[in-house]
Image 1 (tube, one colour):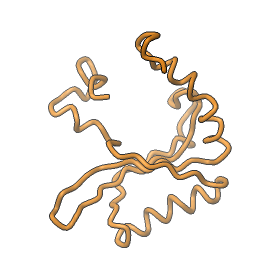
Image 2: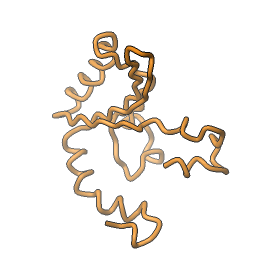
Image 3: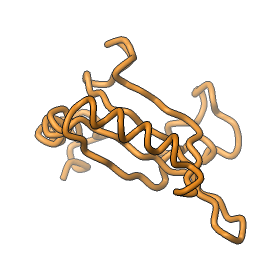
Image 4: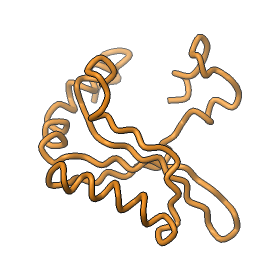
Length: 123
């Protein structure tokens, strides 16, 4: 993943790992738009209780079609967790609508083919 931030990428500066926002990733599948919004709102309002500080919300439902890869839409929350010793780690919480998520699972093989560098990397 880090290699995609090499030159000529506009964010190409050391350390390249600063561009990786999801070393830890969690998916939550919701039963519809209302439940999805309630889930996102809970993470935002419960930061003090969870210890997860929401640093960015990327709502792909609001993006134009040209900016959404393969038409897939979800809401991604980047969060920072800090333990008692001060160690911090960033992660991503993906919040999905069930119908869209189920379609994503069915299309995963096509996604792997599209992203593959060569045929031997497709498993």
